[in-house]
Image 1 (spheres, rainbow, N blue to C red):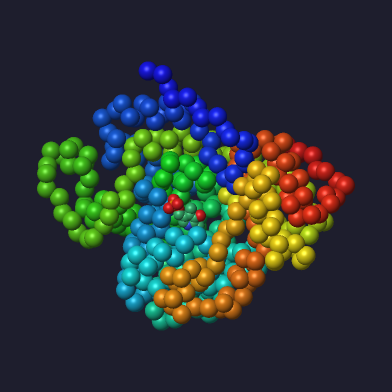
Image 2: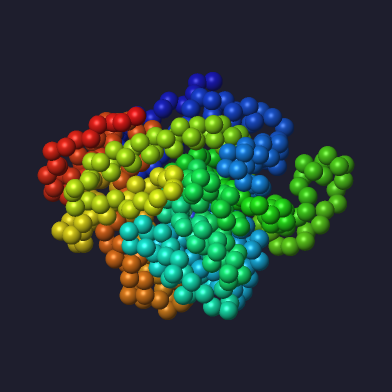
Length: 400
Ligand SMILES: *Cc1c(COP(=O)(O)O)cnc(C)c1O
């Protein structure tokens, strides 16, 4: 059978993020597609095992998306109607939505204007007697202040959930994300660090929470099909209301294969970030600030357009970049601007000053391991041109 012809690219467009899939990945997926188990099979456990080995987490539970991972974590934390959970005011909607799925209330906390990481002091101010958990986000791939949030959670009796969908492979004080909170959620969407098409994982040190999430991803049923087949039995019990959040074995085969390349991809993401940093230094285009004692995972590279090229010209910069074939993007619109949250909780402009001010100036430019040195140079040139700025004399080289 002839394989489908690869479509010709219309032009060389550089998106803000893109997966890398090679022949080993294809072979791994094809092998599983021809096996007995397409779902609830041995590759799910294998992926969980390899993932735990990679991050150092005790338990990892694979699910169908990053959103399902967050929902499972919120469920495992026992969040229900009337409970409040603190989340950052700037993040992808799924962070907050996971709380709402369980009937809880997502309470936003403002972010640090220089890092866009959730501000521990503002988070603490928003704790009420109804607060049950806090969800941090490692914005753009930089770990939040895990020590601060861990102590805050212990002091106030909260479950600490980390949304690490941006930060697979990142490190905080030498420890990888996935080992630093009570529950940590990851995503394997194609723009993230490794992909399974759609997919997600939750890591935890608690065997009880892990068992709860395994039931949750399978309708709230205590055993799965393969376990019952192995034990020659049909009986099962549904003990709580779960969902079908299972991930397939062929997706997990892709995950296992992708994981082997994760470290080299993180190295490349950091290399690109250093090049961008050096290229924009001394210009009115400012990257987000970096904290000490971290390894950044650079899911995103977020710029802040300085005075004169910020509001009202960000849209112009964005549109010009698209005309030049650069897929710039904005991460993210503050959550309280979305009609669902604005109207449900009566939120308004002015409620989250740091998030709002940052939102006016941020722009994400492409960063993914498949970018060539030349691609990165084109992005920098395009950003300077789009912002009507003369590029400063120094052109950084590639230090590898
Ligand atoms: C990608 C992402 C998610 C959701 O992941 P999906 O796999 O797309 O469901 C959640 N939170 C953050 C911060 C993300 O970036």
